[in-house]
Image (cartoon, rainbow, N blue to C red):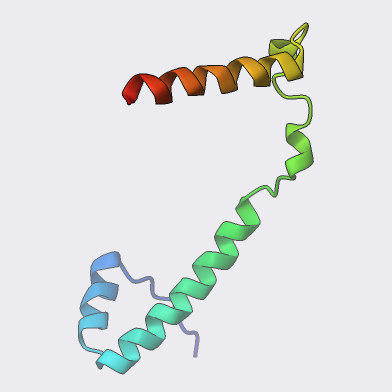
Length: 84
C-alpha cells in the first residue's frame, strides 16, 4: 500500500501546537530553535577583523597622527573648561 505524503499548512501547525502540553511546546520550541540556528549559520558569511585593514586610509593621507591627537585633546579641554 502506497502512502501519500501530506503537507500541513501554517494553520495546521498552529492548531496542533495548541493541543500540546506546555512541556511538549517547550520541546518543540527547542527543536525549531536548533534547526533555525543551523540554517541561519550556514547562510551567514563569516568575516574577519582583518578585512577592515586599510579601510578609510585615504581619509588619513597627509594627516600627522600625533598632531591630530594633540588637537583632539585640546578641543576636549576647551569643552570641559567652557562647561565649568
